[in-house]
Length: 93
View 1 (cartoon, helix red, strand yellow):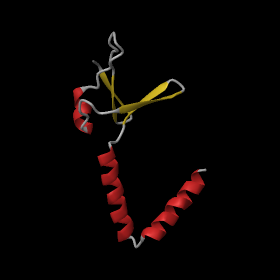
View 2: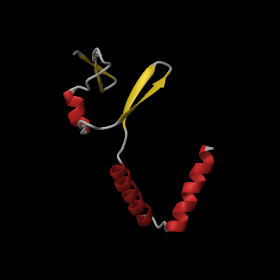
View 3: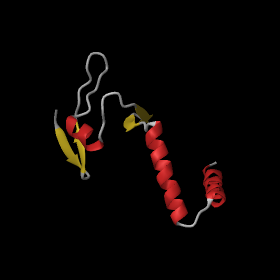
View 4: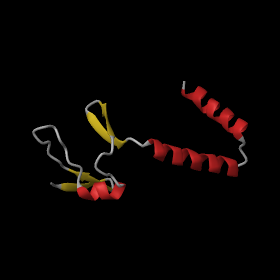
């Protein structure tokens, strides 16, 4: 439908169909590589809805392997990396 620029990002207006379907505009689907069958989550924070693609197991494994490579490159072995993970987890609690 209409689009409008806001803070440098693209904003689109879409209409909900009779069955609750909302179509993600083609330009956005192409930009982010969304494909039929992709899983999304909707987060509701005080009436503001955020749509986020749920990563597949394969995508997560690829990202974790890359993270492992980066940690090794910075001199982290397995023990040191696990210690770092535990430190981050304890700060989040």
